Length: 233
Image (cartoon, rainbow, N blue to C red; front, side, top):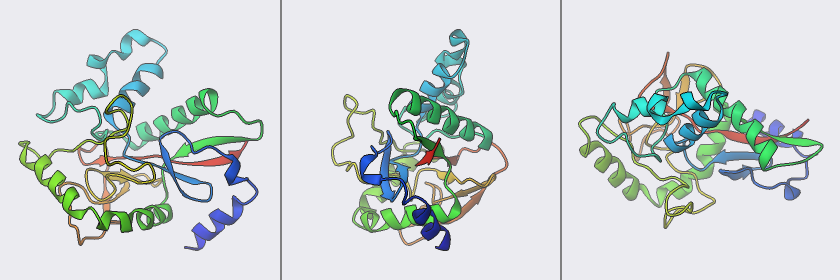
């Protein structure tokens, strides 16, 4: 909690009201923004395609997403969480996204948008932000998890991305909400090997949303979402 107070204090010199919300995120507190959903397979495909110098080698069938398409009966949905990643791959995505957003969407001579993985303290803030809204939709999440698990030989994911319906959020998705925080995949933190949040394997409406998962390499049940902040150049 002391960390969060200090984080807010240090950001007071940046006029929050004058900053646009970074693409894909929701404002959770002063100068702290969080992705609405886990980074999904569509976004990862886009990253793989446009982050390589040799575009011919970035075809879908040659990509990490392409290999996942063949690994399970429900894995071919582009707004499912991206998973089977290393910590270093997630960091590389954050760095690439920072570069693209500051180049193409945000222009300021003094500040830039920085995307990164959240700390454990920040996960507490994120969970607190979403907990009250989650209570109002527990039954819906339970149905989604049950359907996802039932429809697959192995427990699967369910999708809800900003790329459905012509680029708009699906009906009923509020722009100031976070999704998948208490189910789908556990999410990487800034500490290598540590992820937080329930998955479709251990979802419990009365469980601890900050339950910790450890991983030592690519995992089917570990994904990530980015957080963002404005920092001085």
